[in-house]
Image 1 (cartoon, rainbow, N blue to C red):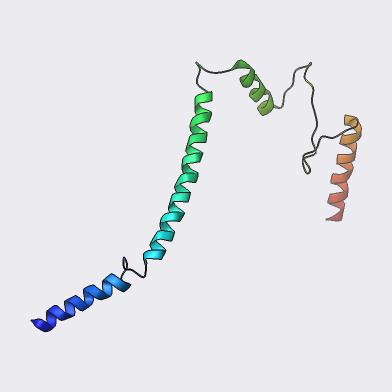
Image 2: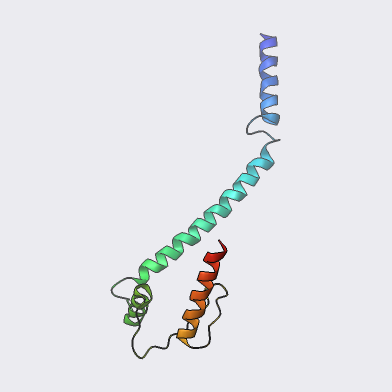
Length: 117
């Protein structure tokens, strides 16, 4: 009986030091907790952003100017009195010059890129 109890105490001591939840694995568990907390904070920020966007679509708080602006952006439409600024998709900087010249230059660039392939 004594040998069995000593063996059981040895097993408990080994588990307390090297087991899955032992002293040696404490740092790994704390690191996992930190990773999960940061992931939880990122997800909470994403949830808050979606919640904010959904409250903007509330019919009691809907701003007609924002609705028309978003609709025109999604449909690629403009009013006659709108000022349109063309932006280079690569650099994000506004383009200058006439539209016809810009379209011709972009078309030539596409043709040149296709001929290289």
